[in-house]
Image (cartoon, rainbow, N blue to C red):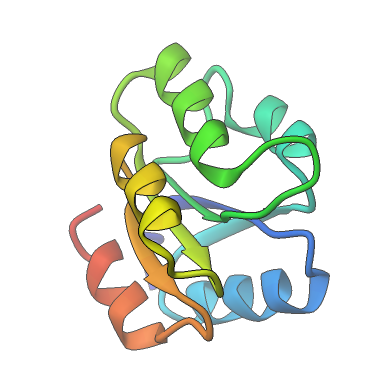
Length: 118
C-alpha cells in the first residue's frame, strides 16, 4: 500500500498516541509520535509532516498553540486537535488555530474521513 501522508501524532498519553499511530499506519499513513509540544516542534519544522494530530492539553503549551507555531513557520498545515474537554473555549481555540476538532475518545472513522483530504 502506498503511503498517503506523513502524520505527526502528539499526545502525552503514550498508549493513546501509539494506538492512533498504529491505526493510521494500518490505513496507509506514515505516523511519527511526540509526547509533548517541545518534542513535536523539531519534528514538524521545517519540512515536517503534512498533518498534525495533537491533544489539546499538553505539557508546556496547548495543542492549539502548537498548531499556531507550526503554521506560523510552515504555512497551512492540516491539523486535528483532539481533547476530552469539549467546552466552547477549547473548541474555539482549536478552530481559531486553523485545526479541526475531535472529542476523545477519538472516533477513528471521523479521524480517517478528516485525513482523506490530505
